Length: 260
Image (tube, rainbow, N blue to C red; front, side, top):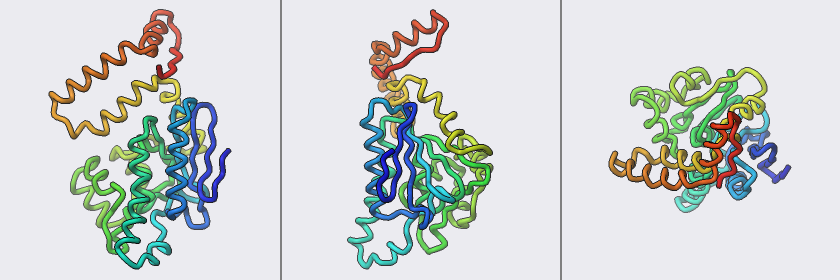
């Protein structure tokens, strides 16, 4: 296990477990934690043994969002911009990662904590977890990509209500709206690990392309998408993973993908 002052990192069975570790501050986002979280994500990215990342928070909740005590000390636009750019880099790193990221949410994911949770590829949430766009409570709008993320995933009226009311949204409601992939009652990390098995056992190259192509699908018209699919499929049909998958099919066994 790697432990920094604000982030825990542990690798086990091809999964990197990253935990935000400011429980006394409800895992509120400081510059230090943002930097260490980005570093941990890069560490998982560079490790060939890691096939999936599970991101969670220590203590009673996932994250309360921005650290209001820190924000209150920012006196000018340059300081605010520096803080925001560093926080936004977390979101960009998660989305650019060539590996799937799962947010394991318990307690609350509020404000920027909601932004971080929804930036992952999947969300596994405890039954009693809640999500809140608490930005309007302090007179600002959602940031770190959350406004667009909700607008892309929800009907416009629902997105506006969640954002402007700032009310807590239960894990079950988020599941019914397609924000959460699985609601669990047992041990959160065990359940998230079980959920991650289709990634761990799956083909890393194909999953990498699926992640990025789905994330950017709205940017392309059908013709451009078809050309991209053609190019990627031509590449993957020449991969060792494809050959292994076909061999496993005929031999009636599970494939052992290596990402090659």
